[in-house]
Length: 94
Image (cartoon, rainbow, N blue to C red; front, side):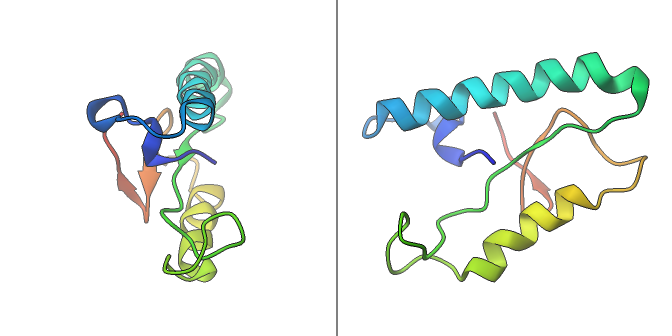
C-alpha cells in the first residue's frame, strides 16, 4: 500500500517521514518485482487515493473506492503487470 505522495515527479513538502517511507516501499516494490519475475509472482504498489478514514479525515473518497484498487491488484491474472504503481487500475508515474 503506497501513496502518490511518494511519486518523485510531483513530490513536495509536508510529511517527510510518511513520504520517505512510501518512497522506500516503492523502491522495494521494483526490487521484489525484478527478483520474483522468474517465479511468476507479481509485485505492485497501489495508491488507494485520499480515502475518508480516521487517518485521511473527512472529504476523501469512500473506503470501498480506495479498497477497489487493492482488490484489483490482488486479483490480477498471472499475465498482469508487475513492478508498477497503480490507482484504480491505472498506472501512476513514479
